[in-house]
Image 1: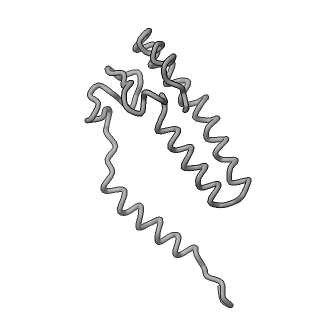
Image 2 (image 1 turned 180 degrees about the horizontal axis):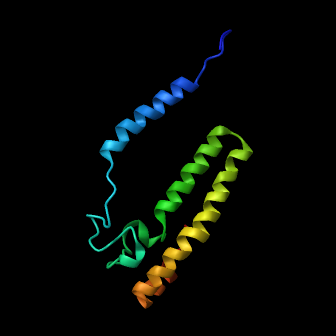
Image 3 (image 1 turned 135 degrees about the vertical axis):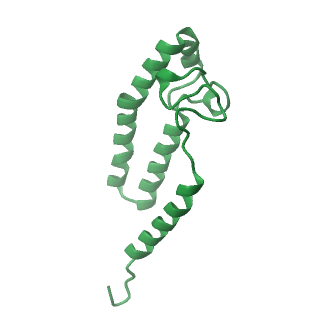
Length: 125
């Protein structure tokens, strides 16, 4: 556009693309396990090790908490009440379609050990 307005779409697209090109090669997602925690898995029914230390002492789902907080930050940054709606939808979706099935699988896999962990650590924060 002209007359003093700046077209930010190409700038944003370039920044997002550059970030993706930089982050993508430097991040690795473990296939079926985590090198730092032997016996953990991306599939809870295949896990052989229950991690209850570090940030997992406080929250059973710290990655979901982080992702939700990131969405919340974007909504606040946009300064629009409707931008906060995806935060609520994301949290509800995670709770019912991701966390509950994961917890069910972990409870079957680890039994009382996981039930005791659930008493000590909260689902979110």
